[in-house]
Image 1 (cartoon, rainbow, N blue to C red):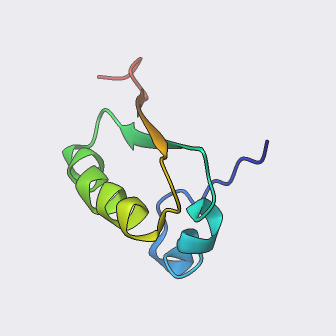
Image 2: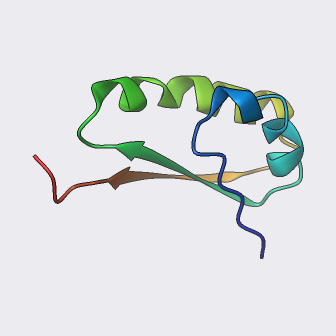
Length: 68
């Protein structure tokens, strides 16, 4: 298993397709205190669907749930 964390940084945007090209699963994490990060999820899902090879399980995880 390999885990790659790009932290959603735009500077890594060109590298991300190679990370999930042959992936079996992807964990999408958003900041529950930031609507902007939740709204960005659809862009990531679209990109994953465009570059995947085969079926990919996608998991959505909320981060910072302990904060208001």
